[in-house]
Image (cartoon, rainbow over all chains, first blue to last red; front, side):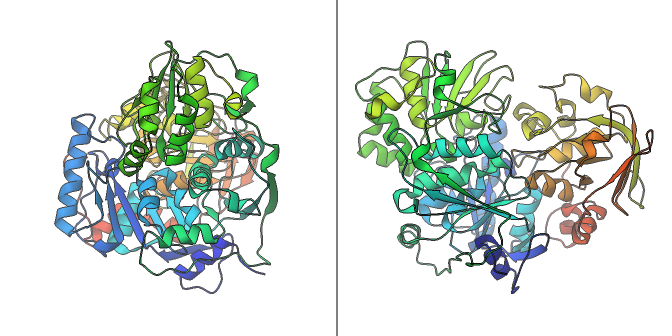
Length: 417
Length: 175
């Protein structure tokens, strides 16, 4: 019996011939990413010894620039840590600032076939590069920084084959909402993506799906390697790597086909994305106070392009505020060069610097009591973006932009005819 | 560790539903407070006042996908609230790691939520992984916690192990 892609990556990095669901494996960690939450007073434990400074990345992203004294202290601690251990890959406030998972993509930090850890739940994002990437806790990241290894409990894998082509106005965020709505949580399971639709999906479009894997409670979300992905990574790093394809006789718990042609714009109702998706039509007309496009899932250049295309020559409703947060300063600069930022701002959108920002309710777009927000970000838990009485609807950047113009939840399809 | 070295817990039961997320356990506003202050805000958005009712040694019975969401140290808040352990239908993998690493005993036991009503008494064994309702006599079997993880749990979590090896400094005054 063969192995799935994730099983092969874990076996390889754990020096084992085979791993099977149920195994506990200890594996080498190629990349450990520390970020500002790890550095907060209530979380940080002072590290005295690191296994290899070249395997560490430090990112200030959740509240960047610092939103309050607490985060300023965390940032200061990060700078001291980086200096003390001579860590070169440091993303401070400035030119290379951004959300860790998007920086991993921008800079080729996720080497196919390796293990990457970060103490942020959306670390599964890098699974798009055929990396065993997982969000862990602060104790785990401390351990991997000190020891260069970690443990995993191997779960069963569900294979998703993506077939066909997304209709105009429908995006991989809608595909995710379809999966979450139909299949619900995948706790203790891995998901693996492949299928004939891959050549038609950009790396940004794919990464939205792996990033959102955290919302399904997956252990790992990985894509089968293809030339588009391998070329993308090779353009960004000189380091060697060995991608892992699933065996032909891999043992999947289930194999599901997702037909992209059949999808339509979807919205998740407030508080969870699990078994909670509706068509835009079902909730159209719901007034929105805030519309947000950003985060590790939807702050890509593709997302900004879509927003700009819809907002071009139009105005955000007077009753709604639109906040747009590029995922990295690099994306921000590129979007400026292409004119997207100008277009979004002319339409009345507010474009912030790159940070997690409103997605985590940390700063720059916190929602108030009883408000309604439609968001293209990662998470819509009660209280996630601010006051617990606020309602957070989750959708694609296109649906959010269309809703910002209408001042109420609206379908983006009219903009794509 | 509560329950003594034999890892068998006996306590009053609280029941939580499916998909309990980390923002409910450790809201972002509480995340900014001290470790000691954080437990008071467990479930403040969905069950205000509950944290005041919890007594040391109580046991939490969860539904499916317990602890979904963020990497924040939500398991530590449940432990510091005084809960002896968690038994849930299924547990989010990241929450499970934090539970092991912060030495908060947690087990997955399909069928457990049908076994208990709030206020009843549970007996949870990390020796034979049996979960028993002491009031009704019904029981179910949990998935065993793998030995390497049980060892971390018994050591008091990851930090004491790293401290012993000289990899991290002893606890600072602030925490």
